[in-house]
Amino acid sequence: MKIAIIGADGQLGSDLVRVFSEDHAVHPLTISDVRVEEADRVLRVLTAIGPDAVLNTAAYHRVPDCETHQDTAWQVNGRGALNVAQAAEALGVVNVYFSTDYVFDGSKQTPYVETDCPNPQSVYAATKLLGEYFTRNYSARHFVVRISGIYGRTPSLVKGDNFITAILRQVASGREEIRVVDDEILSPTPTLEIARNTLSLLDQADFGVYHMTCGGACSWFDFTEVIFETLQIETPLVRCSVSDFPAAVKRPAYSVLENAGLKRLGIDRMPHWEDALVRFIREQYPEPGRYGLS
Ligand SMILES: NC(=O)c1ccc[n+]([C@@H]2O[C@H](COP(=O)([O-])OP(=O)(O)OC[C@H]3O[C@@H](n4cnc5c(N)ncnc54)[C@H](OP(=O)(O)O)[C@@H]3O)[C@@H](O)[C@H]2O)c1
Image 1 (cartoon, rainbow, N blue to C red):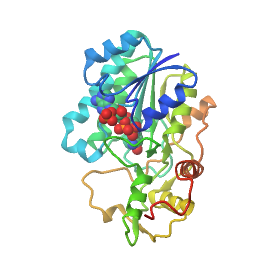
Image 2 (tube, helix red, strand yellow):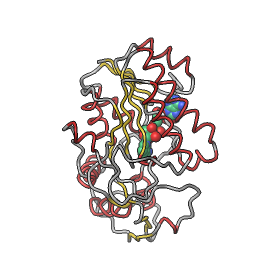
Image 3 (cartoon, rainbow, N blue to C red):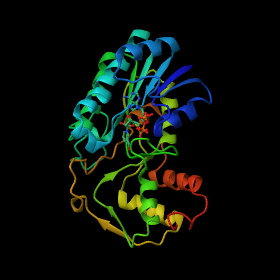
């Protein structure tokens, strides 16, 4: 198959390129090739490629910035998704839009399934939900893939560090202790696993909304404990609450997703969050004891 990947040099995009290139002809598109908010160009670029599927990872996703730059958030996450959906529909190709656990308000205490009612609490989340609706209603052959707390080998240009590198940077700066929130519960997921499972999903013709996160659930504190244990970091780790950090934007306190759709299709191959994290750390940081200490 011919696969066009929008946002190909991003955190998720680069792993999609890596995984899909093994068996498919990949056309990586960066922001210099196409901006999703430019409808004519989206159609022109995709028409020239003639893909069987387009994977859209483009987003304006620094959550606090979306509150202050609402128009940009809408243009990229909403209008951009509409433009890609309309182009995909015109070309009759499969359209994959990556969305977020943040579409939920976090009030549920058991994992969210795809049929649970979204209730976005921020401009970022609302514009991503809008992108979902455009994808679903303007491109018949669509997959909306909701992911959560992603981390990968390639840093996001706009966000910089992923959670792991941000923590290691704090350790390296010589802080006496590292404080991490223990009351935001989710299922952090490596982008490589998302790329692999998206590949399996594309073999199906069962279009719709899918949750795609690692199994189990943890707080960012639990997640950091595993980083520290795996890398033998001895800096004291202190449990704290989101209320200790005055935030401009509401984030769901509980956003664990159940991969109910993938399970129904018999293709839920997502690992447990802890196994995935340990594997990622061992690959990225092969010498325990060294990292974050200098
Ligand atoms: N990060 C998370 O924890 C998380 C959680 C849930 C869902 N998601 C979703 O997952 C997706 C991928 O996130 P990521 O962390 O891989 O992001 P990322 O690293 O920032 O990658 C996004 C890619 O899209 C490109 N892009 C940005 N604006 C664009 C535009 N207007 N038109 C075309 N391309 C554009 C970026 O180019 P430049 O780098 O040149 O700007 C980059 O290549 C996003 O849709 C995000 O909403 C992320």
